[in-house]
Amino acid sequence: MVSRTSGARLGILLLVALPLVACSSAVKVAPFDGAETPECHAVGAHWPTRVGPAEWRETAVDSVTVAAWGDPAIIARCGAVPPGPTEQLCLDSAGVDWIVEELDDGTSFTTYGRSPAIEVLVPDAYDTPALLLPAFGPAAETVEQGPNRCS
Image (cartoon, rainbow, N blue to C red; front, side, top):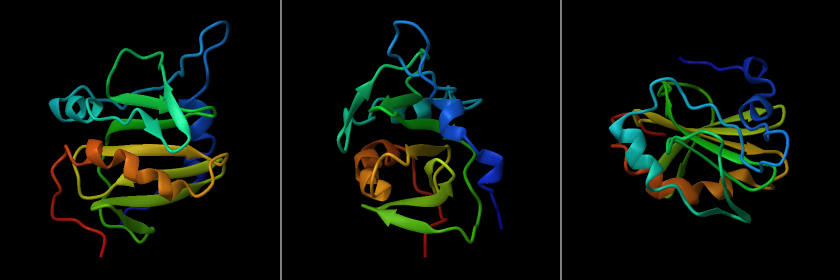
C-alpha cells in the first residue's frame, strides 16, 4: 500500500503555482524530475486548451510537460512516479483512472496504472474538481494503461 499524506503536500498548490512577480502573468511551475521523456512530450502535445471555465495560461517553464489554466491556476504535470496499490479513493473518468487526494488548499488527481503518471492540481476555488478530469483524458490516454486499474 502506498500512502501519501496531505501534510507532506501542504501548500503544494502554492509552491507549484506561484505567479511570477512583476509584469509577467506566466505561472511558475516546477516539472517533475525526469519528465523530459517521449511519453511526457506526447502528453504535452495533447493538453487541453480549456479546463472547464479555465483558459490556458502561459507557464514560466520551457517544457511541454507542464501546463496551467485559469486563475487561480489549475496545474498539470507529466512525469510523476506512478502510484502503487492504494486505499485512497480511485475513480474512473471516461476510461482514465485517477487517485484522488484532498489537500488543505485543493485536490490532487494522479493517473493510476499509467507510467509515467500525470498529476493534476485543482485549487479549492473550483467547485466539483472531479468534473474537470475529462478535459485531461486525451492527454492521459497517450500513456499506455498498465495492469493496475480502479476496481
